[in-house]
Length: 504
Image (cartoon, rainbow, N blue to C red):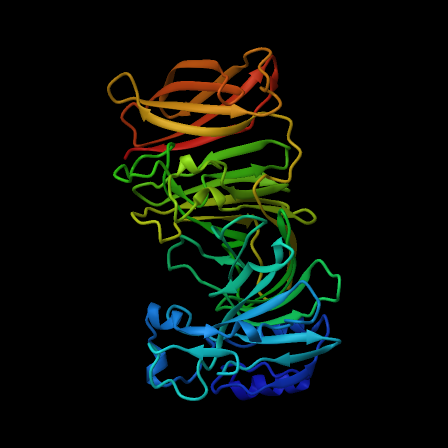
């Protein structure tokens, strides 16, 4: 579809969304209703993908990181400031890594106003030269502020910026892992496809409202999509997501509710051992509450080669990337404060049928790169030409919102075994099932391949739980799948702990 054709589509729907964003946009006003974004996504899917672009002066095409930071939103122009609601918006400029423009519309009383990125909203510092009167020309995203931590100050708690990425925090937390609108062909031959949000419609909350509604138009080579986010900040910030995809082609490997995080090293994986900090990660494990009401904990690793793990399930009840180590002394990093990073839990709405949670672990040597991904992969994918709808709730939180009376994994530690070529594992469990310890449970440990030995269970008064230790002999193999669970009689009383050991 050409830009002109899309403009005609926009006119027929009483919207000004442009297809190529070939020129700086002027302010525009249009009617808005709940079906607008779905109609746009459905029509857009009938044409080939065209990447949004803006014609920029040379001085603004290759902004460095420092130059990008010198383009500042005028905080006195925060959207809805002084309107006596608990929400403000700040806009983010194009530049540096964020060279794809997005349209941003404000919705109020059934009307949408398109915002314009210029000197009214942004100031330019001395590092940005010869920018011209229209700078910064376009938006790359936005962030929402509100009194999440204290009533008199508006802190930032969610940001949408870059492709279909967004991040949020709960009360007292710092940004860590990210979410995405959709994952396509992650870690597959031919390269990953990164869908993008090309336009947002943000509804102005009413006085006294506790949540804000954001609509987004997703676009990529393989699919378009209409998304609706309901964001409610709090102790745990929740985001309700409703999405409908309109695939241009069959989505054979699509990931729903994708999460992206970073794991460099920690007590459970020592491939990098020259860091003064005991651990460096935004998340330390993947948690799954499967369709059989089994809780699974899979500690993350930073392997020397790409690792892909699939956890088969039917009607998964929830999954997430979690940060369980909450002590400063677990990290000893006064700047990053990894102990304050949120866990992110995904709770499907309705039944998602057969499929699997897929975990991707990518080797990395630096903490600036996200190297962990997790998402739900439907067994049947999504066929071309047919709408595909799904919904879920996200919890950006410190503790998972599931009722679980069993023991949970508190820590995983790995070191050299007593015998040559073996590895020692020490796993601590806490929770109602083992706190206090009335009777020591039995640890059932298996390895495939490999052999485990010296399995012991001790009371751990320091954590008010139990500690399990054992040794693994891989028998010359380079990869072993480990499984551990605590049992009392014929009943499992703990999460199922899983670990993929690989030769370092």
